Length: 268
Ligand code: CA
Image (tube, rainbow, N blue to C red; front, side, top):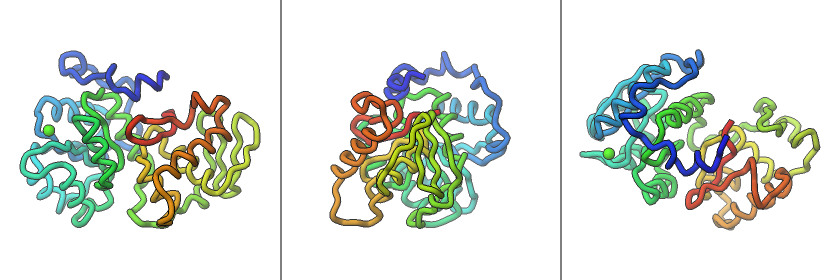
């Protein structure tokens, strides 16, 4: 997979003429079939395109075109996933996201934000609005469906809940074996010793492959409330972890930088 092209999103620009008709190739996985999705997007062509592809992928889709209608609906109806545009009439996506997280039936729903510019992407993550992931427009619908599936593959951990990674099952991703119970990591068959922080960073990113984490989000998840660290500590920890797991730390294959935003583990 060409990771660089995926990260730019430029090659998969959304265009109704090229993408409207064709469904995603793979059949919907049973695990996400009939999951409820709410699409909040005022641009009708994008909303319809997203609805079409999520419906084809087996989701039960509801769509609305403005923020206040979305808030009204989401107060009483529980959704597994909310696809939320940032620029909306009545209530903007970031305020809406915060409201959804604060009260109602969707405090724990997965939220995927759609942003128009990189500065908005920064805002979504930097302000900790409560979104789980975001896509920058223009995006490809296949990318959106893949992100939706990824978000729903694992239950969302409620905000502020203690990490339960020690009880998580072992996983193998891109030839890296991670055993949380034993705190053991093997990279392509070779044992690698990691500090507790390095292990937690690797486990967090690897269990959310393809999902971008801001430095602020990593800071709060890895250091858990320690006030004597800064976002630079995240960069330093990433460098250390790359030296342990990457064969060429200057050109990482697993632990990728998303420029101006943060870090992610290479998607599967
Ligand atoms: Ca919009």
